[in-house]
Length: 295
Image 1: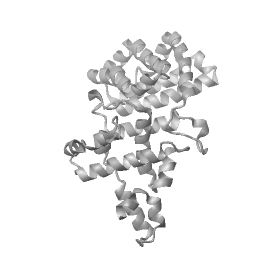
Image 2: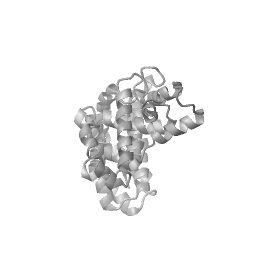
Image 3: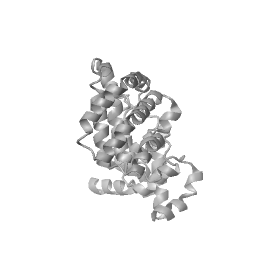
């Protein structure tokens, strides 16, 4: 009976069968809804169906987490997703309100709901190296920057749905390809003494390739398939080749930071407030995702 009350923590607040101090009640709720990152990683990219619940013994073996705990976590994720999926407003705030979870734990569940709602591809073999913490950081970056930021704080703000208007605006970034030579010169002059010679040569000689990947990804992100395959695209177009070349994570961050800041100096961007907003909104998340995924 007590466990059934934990399924809906608000009921635990109002019931009279169990006399609990608020700190004990909160402790029990937190423990019951606690997540193992390794277990949650196995859930991502899969439907929260009874079919997959039957396969949790494999998850248990792989993660060394008890089958009972895996089932509890699976059921909790499924219950929270079902409860908040159609509710208006911030998913994190809705989770905190309906399940009385602390902020960080609510954010974890919110990220899981977001990844499931967009249906990001995360289960391909070449993405298995990504831990839940990696995908969590990327998801939070998108939820705070790529959803409808104008409605943040308003009752109808939905941070599980990427701003469709923004995705269509990204097509405007196509003009940056016409300024490739200028952009390359600006980037090269700023990173030359910040990168190892070998790394500088790699980025310099392949500037056109990397820049086109970045812009083409933006231009096509309004397509459902392209958005769902975002992590796969980032891995194949950037992480994989950089990893093979032994580029350091620090150098990746330096190059992306300079690529972003110099993009703002291009006339086609600097003379338009809208273009600066779109470019910054896009590149800030892309940089966060790439530097997080690159390890």
